Length: 191
Ligand code: B4P
Image 1 (spheres, helix red, strand yellow):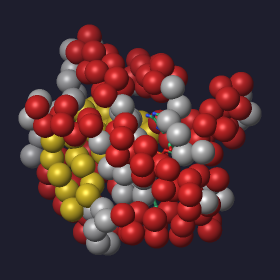
Image 2 (cartoon, rainbow, N blue to C red):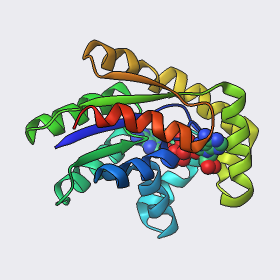
Image 3 (cartoon, rainbow, N blue to C red):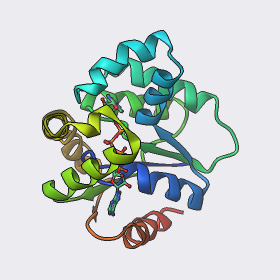
């Protein structure tokens, strides 16, 4: 089994590319953002608690997403590995993921990091808000907070993964197709 992280700031294209790449390589696409939004849409107790945190652009507690991911890994079958999208978002989540994978005889094979300019991130999220109605995309102040949270809490994961030799930077500027090709070429080398 091969395990990839698709990583980058909000609006960098993680979800967009994650779905396509998982399809191409027969990986199970695990997006914690999608899982949390599904809880909110279903009106669960967890969803109600997480909704306020997410609408402010803050991160939900580590233990919530770690448990979600562990359940998905244990319930999976028939895939060539996992593509983690939007997870991990803190160094603690990264250590928990490594531990989870190691206990099951796996590891993180590659961290693909999408590099996108600040103004382009804001532009993409504001555009998405027009269709998605996502509260965290609709307010420019919340978008800026999400980018700040990324820099302070999520970006340190890059140094952690660099030390492990799994960091692979990718130019995330340009069209969706050309970025997909860049990512697919890097991933193909692992198979
Ligand atoms: P996520 O769902 O992960 O949302 P995101 O960071 O906004 O990225 P997303 O993948 O959706 O967007 P993409 O860049 O593909 O997280 C949402 C919230 O959930 C977090 O803020 C947090 O509160 C919580 N959460 C999730 N995981 C968590 C965790 N592990 N720990 C704690 N909290 C967690 O795309 C953005 C837009 O750009 C789209 O409209 C897309 O069409 C467009 N786009 C993409 N690529 C493009 C390109 N090349 N050109 C033009 N547009 C492009």
